[in-house]
Length: 68
Image (cartoon, rainbow, N blue to C red; front, top):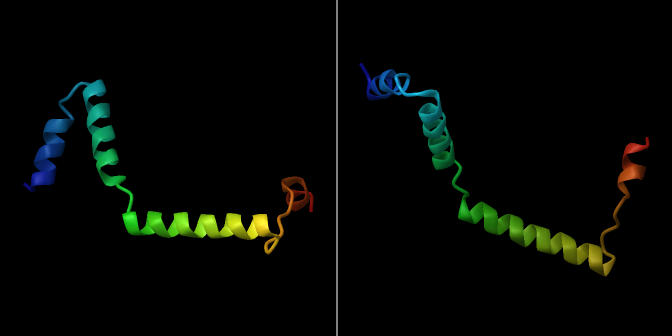
C-alpha cells in the first residue's frame, strides 16, 4: 500500500469536521503564489493603468461591451 493510500485510509476515519480541516489545509498548501508571476502581473497592471491614465489606451464601458 502506498503512503497516500495509507493516509487516505486513516483520513476517512476522521470526523467530518476534521476531514474538512484536513482538506482545507491540503488545498491551502497548494495555493502558494509564484513570486515571479506575481511580480510580472503587478508590473503589467501598473503599465496598463499608466496607459489608461495617459490616454494611450482607451477603455470601453461594461454596458457597451455587453450590449452587442
